[in-house]
Image (tube, rainbow, N blue to C red; front, side, top):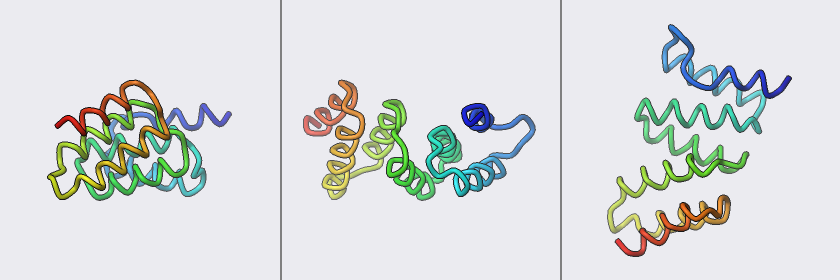
Amino acid sequence: EERGRSSAFVGLPVGGSAKGFVSQLQDGLEKAPFDAEMHIALVGALRESANLERLRTARCRAAAKVTLPESVWLDWLQDETRLADEADFTELDKLHTQACAACPTAQIWLARCQLYSA
């Protein structure tokens, strides 16, 4: 069962390393590039490891391949907003626009409104 296979990737394996888990997820995504659960697990693992560049790459790849849930978009918007300065506004606005198009929920739109009110 496809869903059962993917659920094994949610959370770090007991006794496993974060680096090994990330490698396992990346290998899995090479074989199943449209597996949303693996993309979300990879994003979560990279976010926990605070590897910003790899996290950004994983988020972009995930957004291009699968539908991301609201919580993943909100984390992404929050992370990028915290790190941005005035020079980054255009890129941040593009990300908020992408989020609103991909996941048009009230919380996503509220995050965009807050971007303009800050």
